[in-house]
Length: 310
Picture 1 (cartoon, rainbow, N blue to C red):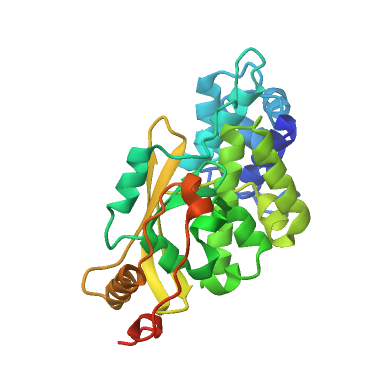
Picture 2: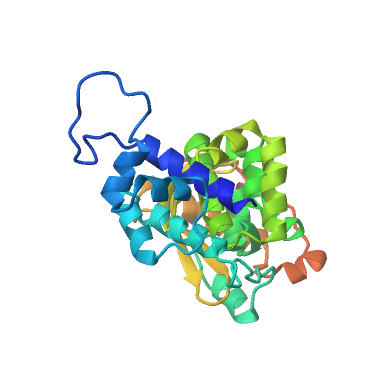
């Protein structure tokens, strides 16, 4: 990806959203010719000359000190994810550093697979930084229905979200989750700009989905740590869950675990899915290496294949 273009568009988009009043500057009468702050206003707030800031906004972050970047982040009122993204863009611009060359794992250690399998009553999957689901437990397969199975691993969440029409039925709050996913990919692209597979994925999404390309152009970034989601399951209907991200340090992998409020209707739905998954005889398949030999046994007749009702 072109670092200077990303820097330019990111800084311009952040500058345009801050009004003089929000920045603590006097608002004079008359019509302003630019949305948000002017370059000279950002330069003043950052403590640099207008010419120096103009150089930054042209996309040249080479040699910029961390103190200037921190001042710029404060001037633009960047949040935690945006500040980290700015620093990532600056690191990628440094020619003397090996930046953005991290190995992206496509498999999980057996011990991680055992952790997944042992999370009874908790749907969980493991994804890498490119949003590939590389492992999941049996309850997660049940939650995702025919979308996710040992045979479909690895499944890329971004491709599913933006290129598979089934995602709009599965993710009830599709627009919100699509915003979050595009922002998470933008964050990862800043961290790992030389990941060819990631860049190919982003290119495919941009050409194949106007929903993605529109969101990508906003340059929004975010950390995915916890999110409330409403998913549609063919057995239990709409189910409201909280997804928490648990990073595996040094692995480049993250466990996403879904939970429900104790005593809630969603917890009853999860309990039903747990029972259904157990009775179905679907062994946990935490590692994609086993996908070729895994078999899906059709549900037995009786209560196992009836939709959940309270």
